[in-house]
Length: 524
Image (tube, rainbow, N blue to C red; front, side, top):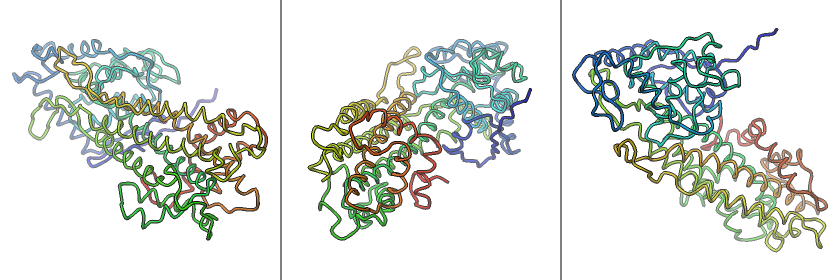
């Protein structure tokens, strides 16, 4: 029997390592081996020494010698501290719902490992080493999808601690099995938690960070494909390309606008739209004319969300926080993540503006009196439906996108005997954006299909030169679906293009179209 060799992603973390969204994405894809420089190891050792020094002390330390939440006033005797850790873990496995996808759970384990290496939690070295081995051997705790309030991910991250002690459940070879079975299959044994270890693992936002990082990676691809599809729509509609003149963008250089104008200007370079007299109108509809403003605002919202997530990714956001330099441990509220929640709510609103523009461009392309093309993009005319029935799908999709723009970061219930009385609902804002992303992709796919048809019809009287992005993107579209000549089933066409357009290899081809053009969504 041939043994499967699994590629392992390597990471080396030093004192000054700053991880990125892309690092989380890389770690989510399979087993990962994390090594630490001596400075990181020493920092963790000193941090643990502070915890050990407080075990037999008189100073109350949250979650070390006190209860949690509403039980904070209860003191735990030194001889009960270690046993309390397992009790704490078991009692707080309270997440519900389907487990997060394997890639998200793997990313969460990675995020918690690297955050613990900051030394703010004072975790026992042997427990941290076991987490590192689990990631390397692809023992991935199955984390419930619901239960986090944005005040740390305590009740869902405890699923990681559960597997460490041989409880809970984990992904193993693509299946979800018991934690003990997953450890045994990887040649690992359950560990004994030391003082504060259970809280160290669970009282953080690593699951939210993982979800957010993968969500932002999806947004980046959507923005890239959006620029390409909108560029082709400009070609098909016959826009006035002067709207992307750098002088116009720089006259009011709102954040992201100059970069967006540059991308569209690059995409339309050399197009026949620049020929004298080619512009059909002095001023096009706003869904075309404001492309750089709307896209630029979405770029800005994306960058804000990215910055918030990467701060959290590289932070020691533990409660209580161990400060090795002074030998102190203090309660902290750094687990509270309103910056992520507010940024993701804002990004969802920005994406709605972008998606609505896409929907309106699609309908404009089908409206003959506005586009100068055959009505409904049908070359047959008469009673031909062309693409007009697709307007109903477009309207339904836009309504769903708009629904997902409703803010989720508004506060909820007070819990834990009303001690925890503010909650930004960060995980919910991320999940809501993921749901919106799925629908937005459909609108962009439909815009691409209609833009390709419009370009074909506009070139019907002779050869028409498109810019570099339009040429390449139209070829991608036509490699999947042919032009519409007589009425046929357009829903299956849209589905076929949608399936092809969002594959990783297709997105990589689209990214390559803009190689060398600096923008917030550049790769490499």
